[in-house]
Length: 521
Image (cartoon, rainbow, N blue to C red):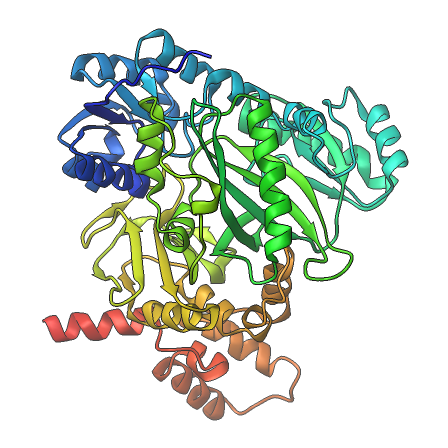
């Protein structure tokens, strides 16, 4: 077979924004490759715009008028002389039509070929590919459901509970748990409707709902010379509404034998579809660490993952460097026996959202920012003091990663970093991570995909903003209390953060920010 030619890349357009755009820009700078940023009106003052060698406006703030406009991005690539495009994740990263358009325009797409993306991007097509690769998968349909009658037939065959899923989507959109036949029709309609509005396709499929599994994923890297490596696993079981909150590498419960079985299965799938570049195969793992452990193929993400830093830290590899080398046509510089995992890494996704208000997004200006550092701490971020967090995009502010020789040491290091992290002016989910990392269930690695829901339901978080609700709740079932005593109680709550009183958490971000503002003044 003829070897693909090597096409050195000299200038890369990053078709994304935020921390992933900065991550790619920094990798390019290390490799001596020029960079081109694109931005919407909402991101005119964003860090990725300032960091790139060149920057071009795409259009108004909505992603549909800017970051999702493949035609505009290709136009900028031609104007700037970029010979490659890195899509990051989200937006156009898993769009086979865009990958094909890049190929037709003579521009290198730093990702898999359009054909592999089509074969694996649709959840139903990916399940068919998994069957061809002899991978264990969750029982259920391998094609989209035609109507509710077919849904009832499949559900009757595999048994309740079941899960409806959007064939074209992810991120928890178009998903519905169904525990009885009576609930299936309504769930089918709702899932199809949400899938249509989120992904432009109402196609849904149905699979067996595995109760309390672990979500484990395998990082892959494949070149155009027929080589494919698995780079260990990531534990992604701490989720809220099917979206990952904390990721770890390696998993605390995956044995070397299970890692090898899952890795080899993932490699078989990738090679069977002609996959090239970075990708991730996701599995549900049932009863890991026991004699009855089993894993089931879930889906494949045909792009770089948000959580790739934890894999980089435990393998010592730079995945973006390797993505670029593979896109140039170079063979992978190592083989499977060269892959060794060392230490433990944990990543927290820091969001501008309010955990005390149903995780409502919290856009606005960052008035105070102290970012953690020190041994074993990495932060992938695109924020600064004075930055206006837009409401138009995903509210992720940064990814905070801690690395240490052991899981216990990584947890301790992350807690220290969270205590050092101050973001003023907006609400964030920093307190959520302190709560998770201090929970004995998490520290014992007794987690599954419903762990966080159980934690949040069992003991709601309390902040200063909810102190009045706390007082009302504490007093609601007691005899009337004299107004004077109630006033004293309220004053005590106002003087000392409720989170500290009830959960013994560190000083709140609001109090910390106020102290720093006072010192600075």
